Length: 93
Length: 242
Image (spheres, rainbow over the protein chains, first blue to last red):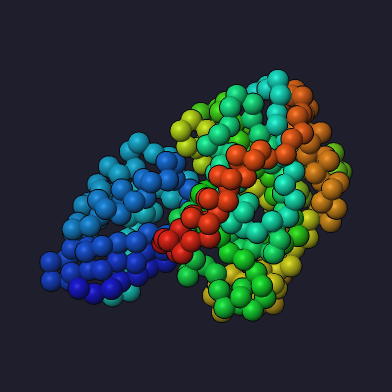
């Protein structure tokens, strides 16, 4: 497992840190922090849980983000920018 | 939106955990009468947004050295250095369901407050109030069990150098230019706390067509506040949970 991180400027700042299995190209665990808003707030924990064991590929990540956010309202980022923030960790490998 | 009555609490200047614990107690116990709480921070405090990391955002060593408090909020948004400001909390069971519309409802009262003080203030969605293009009031909200909490700060004075000392700002950003940039973007209104509080109470009554009921927190609220203060808002588990 490797530890990866990324800071991404969407409308608000998204900070990602994750453990990553580079042999399987899979996220181990992920922590997302930032100055954004999500209502209800516990959606972020659901998103983090749903992203564990997900392949670090655009379609997979985007699908998980969209599913996790479907009953919530987020301000400061959208599905695309959150996906970009997560994938951006690979650039900092 | 109109309310027949609004309960007003002026709780003075207290530590971060004290202030945040009382917000949650009031949210849990509010009835049909909304609450406006007006308060300040003593000692000065950095509050971080619900989704932020204390370690990532706050220079805790400097805070300790400068006797500045730190606490996590139950609302999202960014880290705020609370020193020379008036802070309010508005808590209500009745509010527009749209996030934007509910910000607009409370911010209408805040812009009127500033207008009464002589400023041409405007609501800048999602959650700011600006005067002459500069931010003068930042706000954040949460909703739990059908109750809205919006709290925010009205800047009386801004010490950008001190703010940059206690917040973890990347070194390359702590330049004279960056400090000047922030000074161009934020604005302290330079009025006394009591004067702003008075304008805010008048504006609340006018905006919501409400009679104001000036009260103290009850013994039961204080008992619950103490419990939440020590068990949650003063705890490492809460403040360092991310």
